[in-house]
Length: 394
Image (cartoon, rainbow, N blue to C red; front, side, top):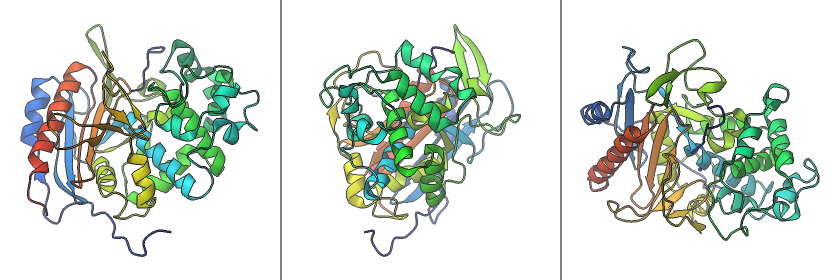
């Protein structure tokens, strides 16, 4: 989850592309989703199921703005929050394959020429530890919020601003011994993003757009607030404070600061989100050839136990293990451990579940925060997994 309290996860010769849709039209989920949306007071709710690379069920219901009559469409953009972390981890895998980084590359190895005077213990933290939230960098603090929301954003480009945030944090040693404990750290993903873009000489924003969105055909994918400035052309996020609901369509207040984009600033339609889930469910053996199957396997492999995390907000793992940009958890309703993640910028909520062994993915999205959104999306995720995990394969 990304908090807003201050202002406020050599290729095979021939690979077939992921089909955008099944050969038969996807089954409609409208009735099921509308029931959940209405029961839990959400403006909009969308979900999709992908099996063996084909979207077999999908639906989007409700309105783009609470209290309006602007109906959502199946290709409307929703915000995925921290589900963006898996995209950053995949970019890291691409950099590793290109020989620009290694999983064991340290912050000091990658950034010491750009950030002078790093604390020696912080400099020794590895890329793998940053991506698995085992670096010892703590979860968001008030001091971190002040860095994220500093006025630097108005004076420097985003990669430079990331380096300035790291420079401002450089004297802080890891809170725990790297590799020993789980701390859900958005700052860790900011640092990993800076390492990736420094290695490539290209911004994280350009990399995720050119190396992931474009090859996967995610035509609705973008960064920042999901609605175009001045238009209500997407389901906008909503802020809820003391029972007062405020739509947040555009501008800086409509999303997290761009500087922490690698931790969670991506938006896309439910169909494109399902395509991403399907690519991961295919274990990298189905096109496009973004990384080798063994690299994707490494990204999906658990690195650290999260332990039991009490009173976690929507968008953060509650228990299980963490891989690189993915939680790994055996729910009581899944047949085996699955990849999962929640994403929220506190105004939206998205969930993704990927079962590589079953080649199955389920995604659920809403443009509303809070307990009702958490409950509705969790029920939808469970119901759809139960229904389609046992369905006859295509």
